[in-house]
Length: 235
Image 1 (tube, helix red, strand yellow):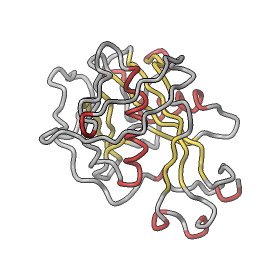
Image 2 (image 1 turned 180 degrees about the vertical axis):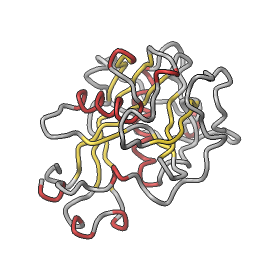
Image 3 (image 1 turned 120 degrees about the vertical axis):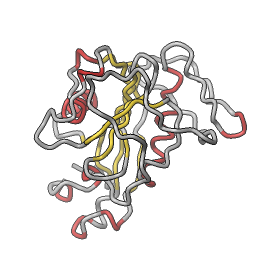
């Protein structure tokens, strides 16, 4: 299902634990890390698609999370031609996404990467909200930066300040809006700190699934979800 501009509707998920650390999943059989995401099926609204993807990719149910905020508008990224099926080139352009910021109400052991027969991730970990995006496939980094920046002001407690914005600039303050209906994003770039790492949470539950020891270099192969579905070209 594509829009008139060739973008497939999609949702992205930024999942927080009680320390405002963010869930990262490692793409199965790759070295690429990313947030949960997936397409919006025909007849679904973004929130319904988000809860479906949350279960399929992370194994969580609606009662395990609280919706904190969502992006106000669609955020888009284009997929390079070399990653697009030849028969879809010319009309499939990429993804347009609504991003949700979720607070985990459950525990680490509620996470389940094998909730379906087609898992998307084979490892996961918690990381600080602001981390380098080098482990994300290159064409998605801009959308990640925009989503993280727009939703940062809704972080619980006092973590909304982006300490790593370029030149000491902070995300622009807008009039407070209902976070569930969206908030305007600040188009400010990220500059992440030297020496920042993907160190695991030392209090990470032993009952949770094991995470990889360190984030490897970015994969040159994008997720299958970035490729158009067989029915996309007909939509």
